[in-house]
Length: 157
Image 1 (cartoon, helix red, strand yellow):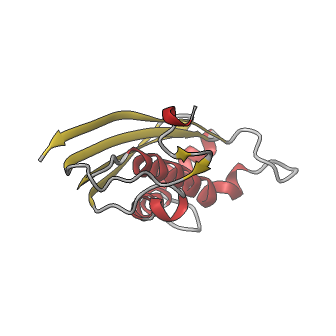
Image 2: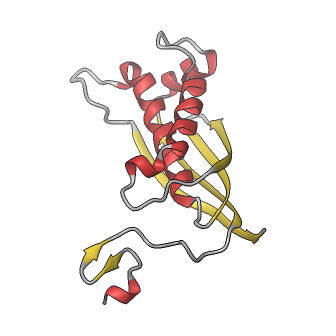
Image 3: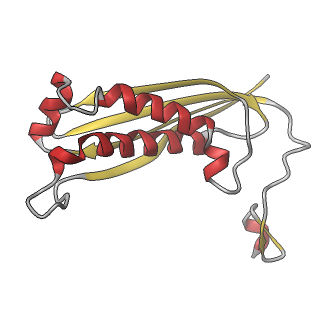
């Protein structure tokens, strides 16, 4: 059974050896969204949160997360990131986040893109949580979902 899981060898978790792989141009795009109250959406649009600009902060958090994926996800390699782009689309009931990551290296960047989206959305939540709480201090309407890899590309150098 170990042979179908590249991160398991003789029953033990391990980082895959990529020493013999050739370098390629790697690109991945990931997306997800956070569902929010309409009043929260309006406050994001009008930039009236006391913590500051929600999307600008989330964009910076996403870039930082991409660059530190190896530090959070145990079996990810530390790779050179050559480009990160973070986009948001504010809808009536949610904020969509899209993160594109590029690298020239021996392993893909889909985990970095997924990590960037996740942290961007968590940062949005953190920035707006005071507006999302109900009378009990909970978040019954706030949901992060549909985080996925939309595209993964590998090109020879």
